[in-house]
Image 1 (tube, rainbow, N blue to C red):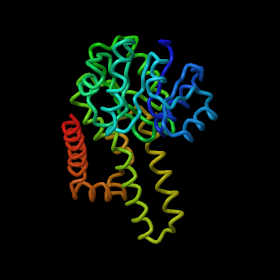
Image 2 (cartoon, rainbow, N blue to C red; image 1 turned 90 degrees about the vertical axis):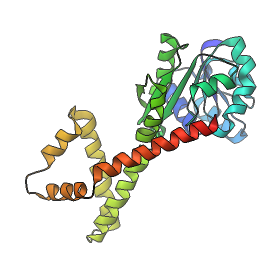
Image 3 (cartoon, rainbow, N blue to C red; image 1 turned 90 degrees about the horizontal axis):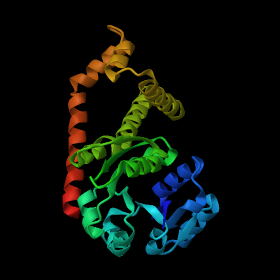
Length: 273
């Protein structure tokens, strides 16, 4: 086993995005191994990135010092169980990107293997524009934390969470968050069309507005409240809209939505255990 090699267990969209990022940032394809049961996906990964692919998870896992578990949550216990003996022999760093699966579950399914990082990326990671919350068990060394960060940083920014119980909040805020933005965009486009704008104009205006506002949030270094204050002229059109939002309890609606997503994530984790 090469401690500098990375094995992906599962070759779906998120794994593919991370592999593309690693190769783009200079990781040699020969150091990336992928276990994927679907032959067409194996062929595509090999052709597109030059990585080594395997039908067998155990054969792929034997090659890498870092295992990225990128399979569906419902099959994670079986996959980990099949790799438990190998984990005991080789002591890899295990990084899971499966939603709702706790580090304790992963450790138990892997035969009490210690070094586990739980990661929660979101869908913009597929474009390299995501954000990932990461939690490491105490057995994970600083060098291993750096390895996990290097892998997930190829998909966007990373945020380390020191209390795993807060990972459900990460899911509620950023994991589910893109859908909140899409819902806002959907509502804004519908409202724009109701005001008489064409569907094409409405779409362009909304998308570019959201993109521009996101860039301002990211690049200005200012708090959202300050940016909102600067845009909101006294007695102007923006103030009228903001007052309408707040009159309908906008902040409370957002808080309840995130509470609901966080609670559902916690319930799913408990059910999986």
